[in-house]
Image (cartoon, rainbow, N blue to C red):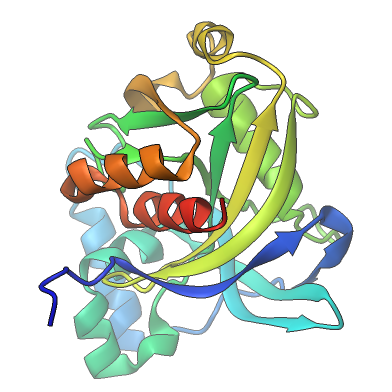
Length: 255
């Protein structure tokens, strides 16, 4: 044994996928929950005081498959309160109800690379529901589409970059490079590279006017080469969200 701690994530796949190579199927109904679990989720939500969160619906990953060079995603909605409860009670839910009763909200994260080759990261604020105070990538979740439409992971990622960094759609070139599953919460996360034509200082100035600027305390940059990324992961392992650690480690391995 080498004593190296286990990574906080499992890699489900890596590879390069453009928007035309990602096929989404959407089921519009919420996943059925065991009655006792639904009661516990509702009670935990009502017990939050204060409760700064909004119980909206986000996309849940039911299944994924790579077939004929395309990534197939099967998604359906899940409530945000289910996600918060699932994150805090993962082991209990698995033991009593089975892993299929976890929220499995599909996160999306982008390694944002500036024109001069710097990765832009955030230090999360205390006002967020997941991993306050941690270093993180930019992203969030996929919102359910309008009735009769299909969710678009790339459009959702562009929306998150606009809201968190004031990067308008089309400012960054996106490619999807992997899917991971966080070890403790069993939460899936799609990984993107967002290559921006702006330099990092200009991006940080623009971010001052971002709508969701409250989600982070500050921005920071690291060089986008593999050695610098691995050094950052080694120094700050315990302060990174699991999805950020995994996203950066997989990114460095692909350099």
